[in-house]
Length: 319
Image (tube, rainbow, N blue to C red; front, top):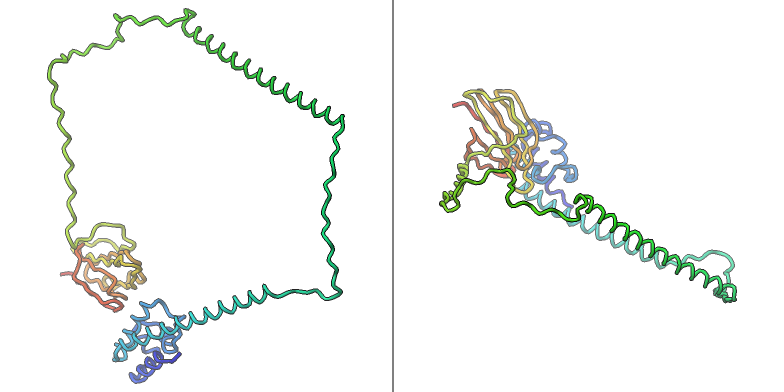
């Protein structure tokens, strides 16, 4: 694998007269990542989007064409993927050949070969039934028939007893009269009669009013939701700045925020996460991947169109 990317980065750094530590202090990129890029150690680097951002920052620091670095990096990644697939294919083929060779190998024990003995087929003993055995079988059969008859009679007695108890219970509930007395049509249940005349027209039933539709949110206005970071507290007449990572695929962005000269947050936000910042005078935000975020001021979306992978500094002042 040719050292195309590493050679370009090292020559550009040396032409700019910078050391690895100088480049790290200038671009805020860790020195180990700069060395891994120059030595093409791809396994030690972070994800692809961060590496592309590193290369663009190095291009600006070296005053060189960063797109040449990005293109060389993509070609190097493609070559590594092809080489890894070839090595995986060769490894799989070797394992399959070893398995076939092992399965076809005949293991022989040293020493005198043993003669094969004919399999011994067990003989089924013949069963002789004598008169005594037949008598025992007939006795067991008679006992089985008697047992089934006894169970049937017991079930009948239980059913008859249940019916007798049920009839006796009905007789006791009816005070022994054997029948339920008819209801007297002249006796009421004690409730007052309905004085309303059934011939009078009833008032029409009015339909329930339809619920009013909820107002649609204005375009560009941030909908309220839970925030992962809130710092520190709202300031009357101050700034209200929100940074939100877009919900597109696996978008993420590194972020560093300072409020009134104090750093309040530094880390990586996942897709859909929001950080809200309150300040009295100024908010300074550095965005690691400007193409993956949206900026809001006082809940209104700002016209911010950052480029993917670009590191951008945004400063907000009280008007």
